[in-house]
Amino acid sequence: MNRAIEVPELVFSDWYPWDKRRSISNSEYPGVYMMAISKNNLSGHRPSYADVCYIGMTNSHKGLQGRWYQFYRSIQGKSGHSGGNTVFRKLGHYDTWSESLFVCALPVICDPVSPAEEDLRDMGIVAFLEYDAFAAFMNAVPDQKKPMYNTK
Image 1: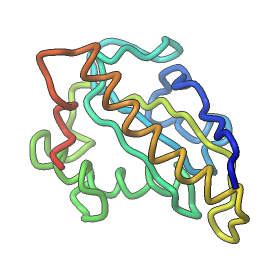
Image 2: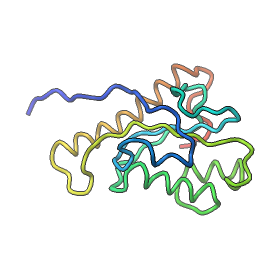
Image 3: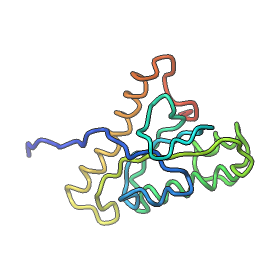
């Protein structure tokens, strides 16, 4: 079957403060996300790759919210998210940080639980978009190959 695959433009939501992450539209679905840890209030601003400290993705049935829960557990010292474990090792327990955590997302609406053919393609697009975000980061921040907390 030959068909063109429509890949969404790499456009993330505005930054949300960590405690408002569930307010990001469609975050119950899979997708790509970026995080920033900053003294500045990034809330409501368009993401800048210069602020990004972590890029991640999920195709889990629990969507972005489920993945963020794993990250949250890790920055509290409980295992569950590789990037969160790295942040915890460098910054310590989330409750002790002097800077604020922000997140933005690009959800992809699909059904990872009982995927139809189109859902499987969309889940592949999620993986593509994560690599596209890494490439955009490298282009925007040429002195870094990846965000500081992406260790893999």
